[in-house]
Image (tube, rainbow, N blue to C red; front, top):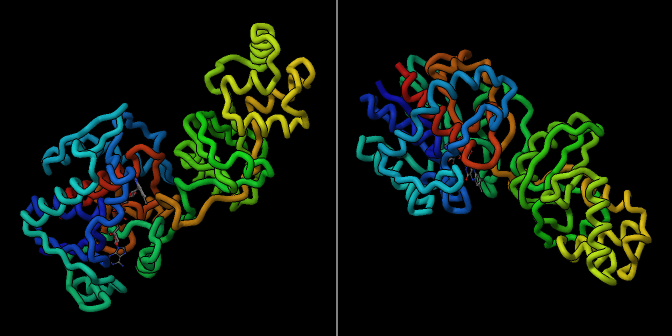
Length: 399
Ligand SMILES: Cc1cc2nc3c(=O)[nH]c(=O)nc-3n(C[C@H](O)[C@H](O)[C@H](O)COP(=O)(O)OP(=O)(O)OC[C@H]3O[C@@H](n4cnc5c(N)ncnc54)[C@H](O)[C@@H]3O)c2cc1C
């Protein structure tokens, strides 16, 4: 029995190895000349391939219950799989990287293991169509192949730059349905006159996400302000929900807590600033704020309250200043596009696959893995996590 895996990315390579170890004859078709092209870019070239802090809440899907079955059946197998291909981990606060700190080590380990198991790679061929005859006919831009089983591991349309993506089209032709697809883990675009003044600032903050004025999510971490918006992991983690909400014409605002280290309430912050003014003789408000904030942020606060650098803390509306410090509102009008997004939110509806085997419930002998499916995770190794888990599930499930 032969299996053709379409896509030599994280999920496809994992699946190919598990299948070849079980004795299947495996072929992998990849449109690029490079294997694992996206994998090489992950974790800034270091490949953050897993996270110790595994919780369902780190993942998102319209059918979380079905995702949970894949997760519970495979999550314990990921680290032994990495050990079996010779990758030693370097663990930083629960974030797993290869010990070499190089994504290429992971790609090479996957490719070497696959080749040693006699997996055949067919590169620079793009799959254009799949037809059911007695077997599955795979039609590429150069050849035709006959497969007993086909694994679709074509990823998503995120971060493709010049590649053209046809995965969704192929899957729809097979009768599958997709949820709405949005760019995710991507910088936010704001509508706020002060963004230009903040461009270049990096700051540790809490981001409060308000959808139709209701607080829906919070993220802590470093943001980078750009002249059009906000970047940084904590903003990326909110981007999927933001795009879904904007598509539903909801209003989206980010409230930035610029003083995340101050764990108390607004009244206590007023008291703290009162005290600072008393202790720091002759300090202006600007002098006080520069004790814990970037000067560009201080200038924006002064601009917002229409005061100058000589203004004293006692001369301002204290509540107004504290509201800005703890919840500086920026209207969000969207995010950057797919080419800037690490992943896509959405994909093939999970109800249309068997979560124990990853087989399509629409068409026999077709299996689906990886980002093509409606599962995404926050930053920190969770998206690769799902690629390995689903690849292992199909690798074990194909009979
Ligand atoms: C810049 C960046 C950094 C990231 N960093 C991290 C990180 O540190 N940790 C983490 O967990 N996740 C990270 N991700 C996300 C992660 O890379 C993806 O979620 C993961 O690679 C998805 O695996 P996959 O196998 O589904 O798809 P991919 O790895 O994208 O593989 C799909 C493969 O299919 C091929 N293909 C598609 N269509 C066809 C066709 N018609 N014919 C033939 N071949 C085809 C593609 O060329 C590709 O090689 C990052 C993503 C990006 C863009």
